[in-house]
Image (cartoon, rainbow, N blue to C red; front, side, top):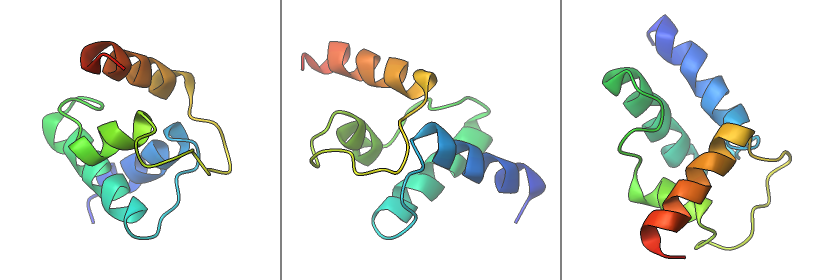
Amino acid sequence: MPEILQKELPRVQLELGNFWSVTPGSQMLWTTAVNNVLKNARYKDSSDDLKNLMLGRYGEFHFTGRPMRSMRRFRSGLERDSGV
């Protein structure tokens, strides 16, 4: 695994509020980290699953931490764009 991805994965996990790393969460976590690295932009063109998760469409957050400020801003932008 490339070093840049080894650094990005834990960063994404912390930013999402210590996001669980079991299916389906691990898929969202890895997809987000890989996209961040490939697109050289953080959370650009996020997956629909991540957007739905951040909008609470899969239920309440049951993370061990709170999403970081950058993720709260990301969620606010999603809510604005989707009319939630």
